[in-house]
Amino acid sequence: MKIIKLPFKIIAAPLVLVLMIIAPLFSFLFCYAAAILGVISGIGVLVSIALFFAGTTQGCIVFLILSFLISPLGIPTIAEWLIDRLHGLKYSLQSFIMS
Image (cartoon, rainbow, N blue to C red; front, top):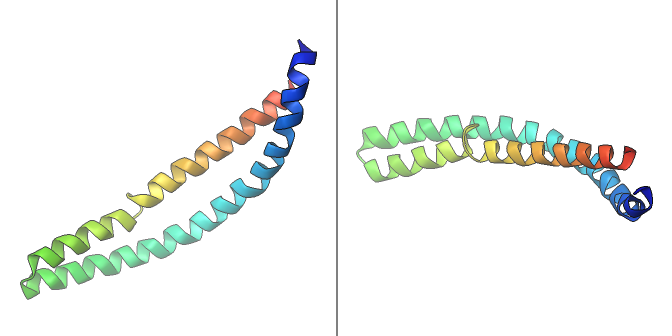
């Protein structure tokens, strides 16, 4: 059985190396991007409130939707989920190589 797994382990080794470099890099970039997008989201909410009092409700709704998408509950949540999957794939491949 070990002879059958050997070619797959050889193929998986470079993938683990790439994931060991890419996953922490994406995590690092995600932290800073989420902080910046949180600030921009807050500014978008303030603009939407100003548009609401100015009488343009359509612009208010558009800015609220855009602010939600870039808030920590929108697109950054999807990015965090993808980064978690990358880390899980890395650990799965590492355990496969060590088995």
